[in-house]
Image (tube, rainbow, N blue to C red; front, side):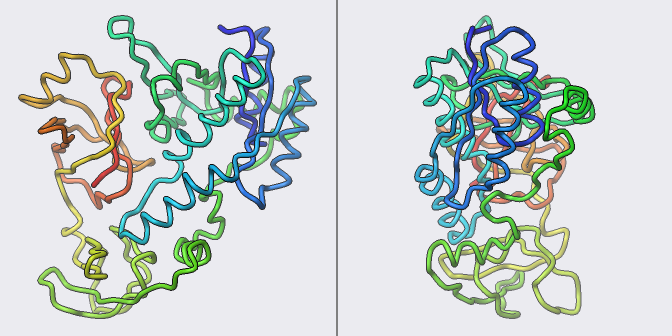
Length: 349
């Protein structure tokens, strides 16, 4: 392992224990907190400082506010207004967090970086490529890391691989870390009230544009408040139609939303763009161009992986699931694994 590791300290228990474990292993550790927003949580920043002091490591703050606004918040608003449901954490990890951590590491002469994610980086000896392995400890965050580039993975360490959350909290408590009992954050950091539409209006200054609800035959059956209020699979907040209805598709060009029954949400196929390849071998790529590569895929963070076949046709990644999947949603990440290793991932289109 490198002599000096820069650890991203978020102010939470996971990153705190990651820093502690590396320090205990004899590594020279430097803590850094990335300031993402103008109203950055002062409690989180203070918690990170307290953690660094408790472990006995230096602590820095890196200003990432401009990059976070451009790369994450602006893109999130643009995608939602275009009828897609983005995953801001996947984009943030690659374009802001890892980019910021590696920049900070270079500035202070650190050899590598580390985070408190539940996953780990492996290198294939035959191909020389890096990939991410799922964590078997009950909590796995490999899905959110699916966009990381090879150069980023090459310098990354994740000490919590294989650990349970309870074990991590136990270490923090036994060593007196000040964030041992701090609860996890659940919501998107820049939309703490989960009001995505409200955020988009405030962020862009653009008002919602109401439009038509259509049934599966294209007939107008009601009015919606604006595309940003809806996502595929949504049932709540649609109004009364005398039967259960769900959002089955969004059409920004017509500013229309199609509603259907639960069964209308089921699909077996998806197409993905902006594909990030990790553990694929030349033999795998050959299969993708011919009979299909067997894998398991996830179309959202908390979903159980489902068996599928991957095809690469004219440079486009296509996935065919063995069984229908509910609410395949454009904008979300589709992530594919084999034997616990991340093969590739892309944005559902």
